[in-house]
Each structure stands twice: as structure tokens, then as C-alpha cells.
Image 1 (cartoon, rainbow over the protein chains, first blue to last red):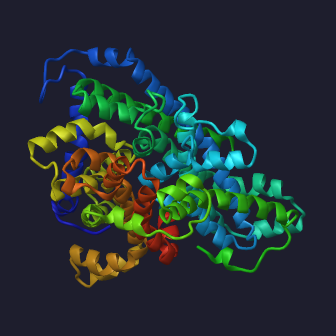
Image 2 (cartoon, rainbow over the protein chains, first blue to last red):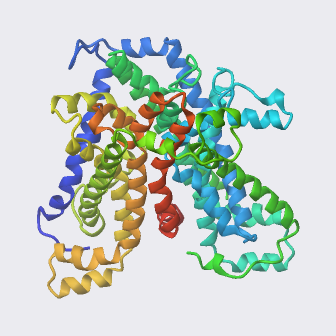
Image 3 (cartoon, chains in turn purple, blue):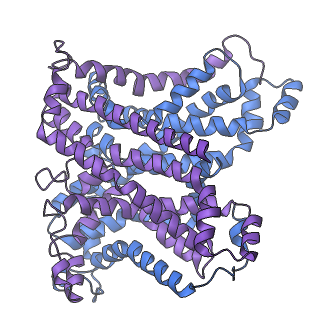
Length: 289
Length: 284
């Protein structure tokens, strides 16, 4: 530790504190306040939990919340897929570097670009359906984004397609940092691929899987706006409506900032609860192990 | 970190090498297909796109690019994205370096609480602050301004920056710092002459992660930069798409142009990208 006089440390942290107060502190306090008022212009009368009641009974909100919850189903899938591919690459199959470069490319493309390009791929008369018809799979040539039964799942597929690239390089980097001696000893003992994955690699990857799960949970709850905006803007109808878009629409398009603020508070609480649960799971897993 | 992967091919765990190749080739085709589609379509005219969406473009058409760049909006959007990205990454890094130095290397009341608050803020979604921030920025007349939105992006990336740098600064051997202090160096000199020269690995991670975040960001850019001259590339692309909705080749030409800068950075600086984006998670 450096010996510093009186106020010196506070001078170093002052810019950070000021910016965090402006960008996080003040708006977070205001959003709670907004959610309890009927806002007209800058403020309005206190109405208790009226905004929350209005939001919770709004069918569009319910759908948006359901859709975010369904998108969370992709998190375990993404983790499994990227661990699997990373372990395949870790075995240094011929050309693993090229595979890594290619598999990470989706993550390099910006979300709006991914969304726009893939929304053409998935068009009813798009290239995917043309390909399926050419292969004689006419029955699978669906209206991927135009039919409200499939739209959310198609969006989920697009998100998985891009985000798995990050998972693969993340797990591969962790695997590359492992001590190889126990693995080589196991090789000599004739451990098979599945046993090695389950008993030797997965325990080492646990911390990284947790990190990836937290990042992905936040993505699915509060980071899908750019995908949705570029792909479907919430449509058809409300088939791909999500909480972020709901906040944007209510707060800025419909001028109902009180309702938007109530959803923002609920979203924040939901995110915190889910992350607390994830860390809880980790702790009990550690106690068991 | 790459020593484990640099060695020769492993031979013993190859019970089904062909199966592995088969799976990896399938995954690679899947990963590359949209980029392939974007590229070939950008070189077709609309007629040949409608006739055959999958086929290779022949003869090559270059007019889509001219059409996409027509009017020069594209370059303005691109310049704005560069300004916001560079500006906010520099600001965020500068503020974080100062704060992290104090949090990691000085003792003062409230230090641990400050660090905990900072960590907690890493999981707060930006959309939560959207409505109050929009009102505040309207009152301060910061909508549609470079300083306002640079400050906003710097603030939103600050918790991660401070977290990463504090952990890194804590890992610097105490002896190095003690030696400088014994020589009579002030704390600012310790930061500038001892700590920062040791920090490039952490700074690379920070710059790449934050730059990608700001470059790709859509919601803040959409709300806080409504005027046409101030739009970022990402918002511009969604506008562009609705304008050329029916002309798919022109849209794809625009998307291809917009992805080139990041693609080139990635292909030439792949080591830094991969190391930068994974370092934070792998250390733990």
C-alpha cells in the first residue's frame, strides 16, 4: 500500500464517482421515483403502485416477459455447444486454428449487421428456403420470421449463432491454460474421450462456464434490443416483443414514462435475482465438491 | 497462454478423427454461410438475385456499392461511430486508471464499499436508466452532442474498466512500487512510470472489449442521437435497410462495407482480439 496524505486517494476516485453518479446513481434513483408517479413532462403526482398494476395486467408486457424468459432457455444450450466445440478444437485436430478463426467470425460481425443479413436469409422466399426446396425438404421451408409461431425461435437461433462464437474462444482459451500433465497421465491410463471430458476438463472449466452463463443471462434479459430492432422490431404483432423494446416503446413512443420506469425496475430486480441464484448454485456446488 | 496449444499434434485421443472433422466442418459452414450470402449477393444485380439466391454472382456487379455509398451518408455514420468509440474508450480508460490505482494501491475509508458498488453496477442493464437519462440529457441539451454521448458510453463501460484494472493493479508485485517510493517518487509518478508501463496486457483487453461494445451499441445511439448527421453506423444501417428494403443486393453491399473495418482488424490482429476478449475470464 502507498502511504498517502489525507484527501489524495479521494482525488483519484473522484472522476469515477462523479461519472457513476451521473450515469447510474441519479437515473436509478429517478427511475424508482418515476415508477411511483403519473409522469407528465418532468414529474407528476404520486400514485403508489398504480404503474406496476397497469403494467402487470398489460398483455403486451406479459408477452414480453415470457419471451425474455424463453430466450433464457438458450443459455444452457449455448454453454453446451461452445464447450463441446472448444473441446473438439482443444484436441488439436488438423486445422484447428482455421476452425477457430472461422467459428469466431460471427461474433466479429456487429449485431445489427447479423440481424439484417439473417432476416433476409430467413425470409419466406429467402435463400434458406430456396436451399431447403432444392434439397427436397419443401416441408421445412417455413415462414421463419413472418409466422408468429416460429419468429421468436428464429430470433433465438440467430442470437445463439452469434454468441456461441464468443463461448468457443473463451473455453478454448481456458483449456489452453490448463496444466497438461494430469491429462497426459490420464491418457496413459487409457481414459476415453467422454471420461476425460467429464472428470478432467469440465471441473476445470466450471469457473469459466459460470462467467459465460452470467454474461449470457444478462444478454438474454437486457441485451437483445439490438437483435430485435434489426430483425423484427418486435413483430409480427407482438411475437418477438421483449422487455427492452417494451420500455423503449412505452417510454419514448407512447409517452408513458411511468409504466416504462416500472418495467425498468422490475427488469433490474429480475436480473439481480437471477444472478444471485447463479452464484447461490455455484456456492452449493462448491460445498458438494 | 498458448503454450499448451502450440505443440505438435496429439495422437492418442483420435478414435474418430473423421467424425470430429465432419462436425467441425459442419459448424464452420454454418458460421460462414451468412457472410458468404452477404458477399455473393452484394455482387449481384437484383434480377440475378431473384433468379438464383444461392448461386455465385456472374457477371460481377459493382453498382450496388456505388448505390450504397451514394449521398455520402455512409461515411458520416462511419466517422461518428469512430468518434464515439475512440472518445468514450479513451475517457473510460483514463478515469478507470486513476480510480483503479487508488482502489488497488491506497488505503482509505470507504474503499471496499466503493469497489463493491462498482462491481454491482457491472450487471445493471443500460435500458434501466434509459428514461431518466433521456430526460436529464434533454434538460441539459446534451441530446445529439458528441460530448454528451461520449460521456454516457464512458460511464456505461466504466464499472467493467475499473473492475478489470483494479484486479490487474493488485497483481503487480509490491516490491516494484516500494522501491520507487523509497526513491522518493510521488504517487502520480508511481502510476505513470511503474504501474502503467506494466499494464499493456490489461489495457488491450479493456480497449478491445469496450470498443466492441460501443461500436455495436444500438439502443443509446438510437435514442440519444436522433438527428441524421449524428447517427452512428449501427443506427444508420437500420435506416439504410428500411430505405432499400426491396433491393436486397444494395442492402447487402451496405452491410458488407459496414463489416469490413472490424473484419480487417480481426483478421490482422486476431491474437489481440482473442487474448483481449478472453483474458478477463481465464485468469480466475
